[in-house]
Length: 198
Image (cartoon, rainbow, N blue to C red; front, side):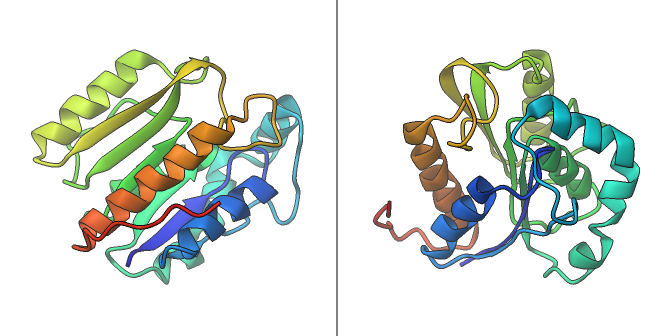
């Protein structure tokens, strides 16, 4: 199975993050969910963003340094929104990462991609994502010889993996867990099917 670093959004380490991690753990993966908000959690998007900006993304990203340093070289990198942005940044420094999983956030590529497969999960309409950035990242990833998969949930919103938010979507969450599990298994060389668990 795979080792996955799973990074929370600007809302903090909410139950939705630990639930997502637990679903993957049930399928045999090792998942780390560091809390770089030091226990602070938000229900309101604007309040979470205000906290992110008050602390600063550089400081928040720096809080991950010890956790990242202790990861296996081939650990997969993933995250939700802000955490997805951090995972994409880390991918440039960790070319042996097994996979990169970007949920609710995609940035335009900066320079060449390192050859890691990428899986994107997003609403069809998300005010935080520019489709041109998704297209550009996809082209860059494929040019590196890696696979790029863009899973698009119909509708408009943002954090569909968090059922505690207005944008939560139970079926999309379940599908995302299945798709992430399948990618991690494929990259680990284990193509055996799993039975989805509720």
